[in-house]
Amino acid sequence: MRTKIAIIGGGLSGLYAAYRLEQQGITDYILLEARTQLGGRIMDFTNLSQTTKNNFDLGPTWFWPEFQPQLNAIINTLNLEAFAQYDQGNTLVERSHTQPPTTMRGYTHAPTSMRLKGGMGTLINALHAKLSNKQIVTGALVKSITHQNSNIEVNFSTSSTADNKVNVEHVMLALPPRLAVSQITFTPALPSNLVTQWQNTATWMAPHAKYIAVYDTAFWREQALSGSARSSVGPMAEIHDASNPEGQAALFGFIGIPADDRKHISNEDLITHCRAQLVRLFGAQAATPKADIIKDWAKDSLTATSLDTHATNTHAPAPDITAQNGPWHQSLVGIGSEWAMQFPGYVAGAIEAASHGIEQYLATSN
Ligand SMILES: Cc1cc2nc3c(=O)[nH]c(=O)nc-3n(C[C@H](O)[C@H](O)[C@H](O)COP(=O)(O)OP(=O)(O)OC[C@H]3O[C@@H](n4cnc5c(N)ncnc54)[C@H](O)[C@@H]3O)c2cc1C
Image 1 (tube, rainbow, N blue to C red):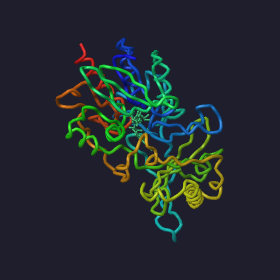
Image 2: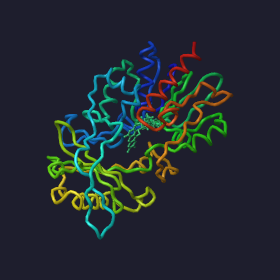
Image 3: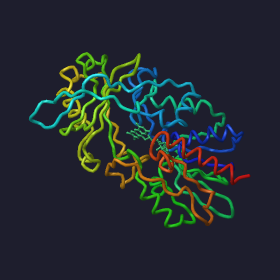
Image 4: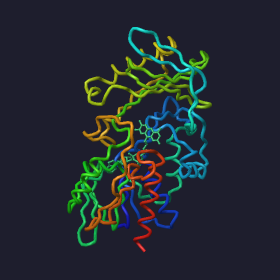
């Protein structure tokens, strides 16, 4: 099989690249996504009913329209509805095992953290719906990419066939740089300085795990609590309201236990401790969520590598997007969020990096 471009990864960056190509009238591309669903780190917990009113974000939750105008414009173009993160009321602070949580006056976030109605997954679904190309292949794990005599062969496995290939002229890597070099064998090898840069670029949020508990009502709001909490006790270090307007109520928290230590704790045990923490903070009503879930991104081999064990507070600076010279120069370009100059690792970065990759492609392919 032959086509012009292979996009590796069907997260936001890959889908947005496909959307931008189609806007330019280019449809001879294939998008290969290893998971059985699109979205990558944008992943829904679709709970109890099939309506998007009850989707909760297992991955990203927030964006900031005030300083991410490119992402905001796309959200508006796709007619997606945004709303502000609920932060009215007091916040709770849990300092030790021996003291009850203390109540503090909550603060309003500036700039406002915004969420999407129906969850971030609505962005993925809306972009996907705009694509006319049917070569969006899920369940396709790319294993090797070989450059020979101006042809690039991309090898991938699916659940039915171990050895599939597609021949292309150009490859766009729409996945984290570190993951690309750990998962894919490049022949000839990529320049060693590029491999080092890509390996050293931490994948944003890959070491994290998120807990979501769904309830019928946001009972904490009735106690003048915002649903936000900070804890030095854990297992969650930071908790927020995750309720859906017109849908179910929910709380979510980031687990504070490092990824290496989480390897020794079962999800069931962790869930039990998370529930107990929510009871300590918000009272007995928190004991019986209608549904709850842990998503441990560090255990997901399509996001994290063995290097993604330590959470950092800072976003890694963007590495080079292509090789300086040699066969891979411009024929292989990184477009995943971590390659963005302004917003590396963010949802907005996926849009930024994909736009940049498409601009580079259009500039060099004519
Ligand atoms: C818990 C969590 C919370 C976050 N919170 C926020 C937030 O609030 N705001 C914000 O701006 N950002 C947040 N982020 C970051 C945001 O999710 C990412 O920046 C963005 O989704 C990255 O999109 P991407 O397309 O670049 O990469 P990804 O979403 O990682 O997509 C890469 C895709 O490549 C696929 N893939 C991997 N290997 C292969 C292979 N060998 N072959 C084929 N396909 C492959 C993967 O399955 C995946 O679908 C958060 C992330 C997480 C995990």
